[in-house]
Image (tube, rainbow, N blue to C red; front, top):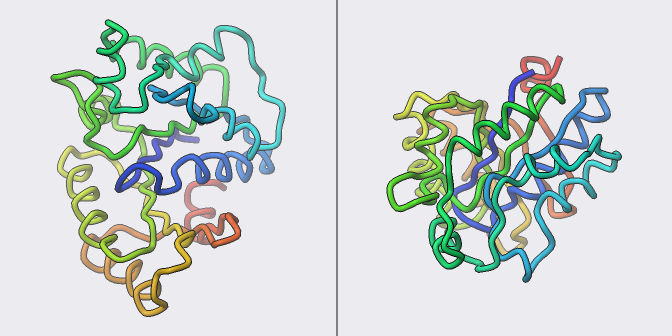
Amino acid sequence: MPTWFITGTDTEVGKTIFTGLFGNLLNKKNITVTTQKWVQTGNQDHPLDITIHDQLIQSAQANNDTIQQCRMPYSFTLPASAHLAAKEENKIIDQNKIIQSLRYLEKKFNTVLIEGLGGIHVPLTETLTTLDVLEQLKIHTIIIIPNQIGAINHALLTIEAIANRQIPISGFIINNINTKTPKQVKQDNPNIIQSLSGITCIGSINNMKQLELSQQFIKQELS
């Protein structure tokens, strides 16, 4: 079972919800799963993303202090890009710490779901982006796309950036949580993104925050 990295076309597009719901599905298949957030920012303003993951997975995590530290290697108060939030606390994010934390979790669980911070090009330092780390790790990536006007351009740019680094893309998820999106747009967005990118739409999140995955994805990657 691979490790998956969950990214999005922007911040607040549904990465946290999908990560928890996907973890819940894996858990029901008796796959031991944990989640990871390389960098959490704004940790005093909102619930921690891994806390929301655990609530959605609805299963007691096999946690100890080391596992908890590895699930969230970095956490900062400022709700901002990772590099800036770290700078405000006179810290520098070390990619080796991130990678070592991931490897530890991979030894303890069948699979790890990593929720990214913002979009794929979010800087971790002034010289390193999330995409740079992913390029080293070659982690299977799932892209969350909000089903709304403007989604096509953002989706294609994100897919292109990941594909250009030879990072495997498992597919994209359409998040239908925006109820104001016109029906024609909602129907067309996943089709045209799939057609232009060659990347498969592997599922969707409906406006009730329920995850629906394609049978093809389940058969190919979860069986």
